[in-house]
Length: 50
Image: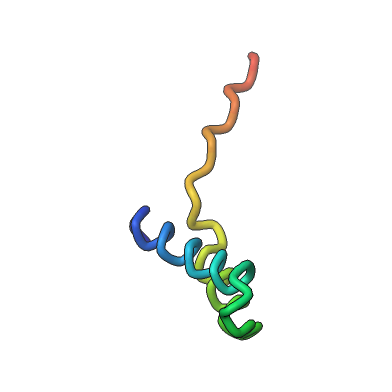
């Protein structure tokens, strides 16, 4: 998934959850969350001190 696709899905999720004019669709929220799971870039793990 590209960074742009991730941003689009996050924006849609934000709209569903926060826009009072948008109908809450729990199935869509869970679907978006499942698609986004583990897709966001993570900070590199700290190097272990050996």
